[in-house]
Image: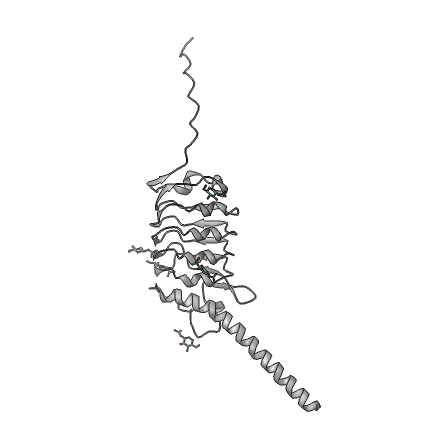
Length: 222
Ligand SMILES: *[C@@H]1O[C@H](CO)[C@@H](O)[C@H](O)[C@H]1NC(C)=O
Ligand SMILES: *[C@@H]1O[C@H](CO)[C@@H](O)[C@H](O)[C@H]1NC(C)=O
Ligand SMILES: *[C@@H]1O[C@H](CO)[C@@H](O)[C@H](O)[C@H]1NC(C)=O
Ligand SMILES: *[C@@H]1O[C@H](CO)[C@@H](O)[C@H](O)[C@H]1NC(C)=O
Ligand SMILES: *[C@@H]1O[C@H](CO)[C@@H](O)[C@H](O)[C@H]1NC(C)=O
């Protein structure tokens, strides 16, 4: 009886350990899969992503990837890495991501609407690439975002009003694109100056209050 009891509790423990292991494995692999899908859409002439090896349990030991204590990805740092290719919708699965740094590469295609699922994002830096299409409305869901730099790409269409609801936004750079329509000036956008929107020939800045007429020049000599 005692022996049976201890046997069954041993197998219960074994079962529990196995379940736990599988959960962490699946969890780790889901984020590893997402990043690996991204790697598959990139051309990487300098082998910057060499350590992104799919056979590892999770992506936490990969270069340019940082995880938290729960082995969940919080940073992807691939600025100035000479990468060419596209962003993938799977990036939206990195639910704990805080920093997505992909500036100064040659990444083209569109910004996936799924990036709006990265609700813990603090910094989204996609500047100096070749991104086209429009700025997704879904980026307004990034309610912890402090830095949004999409400048020096080929983004078109209007700036979504959803971005004005991001109260945490401190740095915004949408300059040097092909945006059009009106620049919002309400919500968080009341903080930003025309510098944030420069070099978008078809963009219309909010009407500026005209300066008071200059005072009549004083007589030269009196
Ligand atoms: C990935 O890791 C496995 C196991 O450590 C190794 O055999 C394999 O060569 C690695 N693949 C690449 C592309 O580095
Ligand atoms: C990117 O390419 C330049 C040369 O075109 C090279 O000097 C630089 O080291 C490369 N960067 C990386 C991260 O490999
Ligand atoms: C992007 O590609 C162009 C050529 O298409 C090249 O001149 C430039 O150095 C590349 N930039 C980066 C950061 O890889
Ligand atoms: C991610 O975003 C897309 C489009 O915004 C949405 O359809 C999808 O349900 C989201 N996925 C998750 C897991 O939240
Ligand atoms: C700014 O104005 C637009 C259009 O009227 C609206 O959709 C948006 O919610 C407003 N933003 C804030 C923060 O009130």
